[in-house]
Amino acid sequence: MSQPNLFRFATSELSQDAFLCWLLSWASPQYQNQDLTLHQCAQELLKAFFKQHPDKQFPHQIESIEVYKQDDNIDVWCTINDKYAILIEDKTNTSEHDNQLTRYLSKLEERGIDANCIFPIYLKTYEQSDYKPVQKAGYSVFTRKHLLSVFSNHQDRIENAIFKDFYSHLIHIQNDVDSFRNTPLDKWTFNAWKGFYQYLQDELGVMTGWSYVPNQNDGFMGAWFCFEGLGDGNSKPYLQLEQSKLCYKIEVDSPDSAIQASLCNYWHSLFLDRAKSGNLNLIKPARFGRGRTMTFCVDQQDYRQTMPDGLIDLKTTANYLRKHIEFLCSAGKLSDATGQAE
Image 1 (cartoon, rainbow, N blue to C red):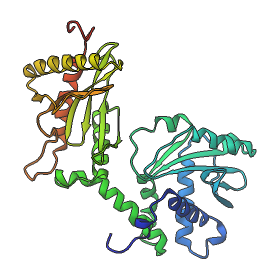
Image 2: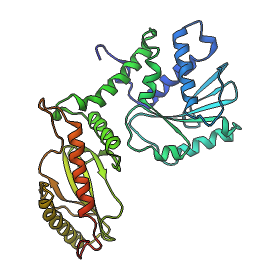
Image 3: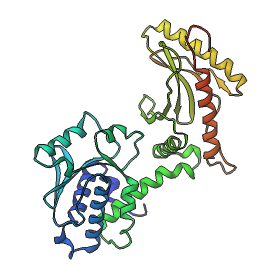
């Protein structure tokens, strides 16, 4: 950002709610003559929300709009033409919780709004690895890229400083998320890690999910590869990426520390022995922990492969991880963690 930006300081979801309410209000025909460019942008945004639910009928002309903020704890909702309702659950770095999505839908229905006329939108301006619960609740996901797609059609003509600041704010986030492609590996931000994990999730198609993992050392961005049919009833192996570190871990059912120790040693010996024939450089972690989840092997090197200029080589990195995933699925197929491999 080349100049101070309002949304660098107004970072809360409430600030984003306020911007959405402000912009959507410009969709009203009464403001068409005051700022036509903002009016057109707001109308296009409303139509983009409607089109996220192609199974429902929606108005092709917006004649009136009423916008509400934090009404019945709903972030943003608005009525169109006194008939249709757009319900927006607005998120930045948080995600859905406590069955809130279903509750908000019920609240609008209790007001007498026809369920077929309610258009639930889950608006997310930062990354999220899993939207299945959102979609199951009947919401359509509207991401930062969706917003940018609408805004980019108008940003050259809009002179309003609030709009331009929010647009620049979104571009800044997008550039930060995409920076893993053109930034040295040791300079990646948490947003760059999110962008990288999202790339792997899309490219590999088998990542279970990713999120921030807090700990006493400021935490890390973690990602997981978990598969059915591995291990037995006592323990289950899986892969975990701890930013630059690739870990082989087990999830143990028993709270008994002696059983945990035995299983950790068992999996370590088994995988270390098999890794030799698979030409994988697995080593023992700095220490074996104790608990329901434990690291029993780690890759000896940073799994991220680089090009001659030191930037990440995404194709070879994905292939490198595929090799470890295949190895996990092969070595982890045991009928009994205290018996013989299949």
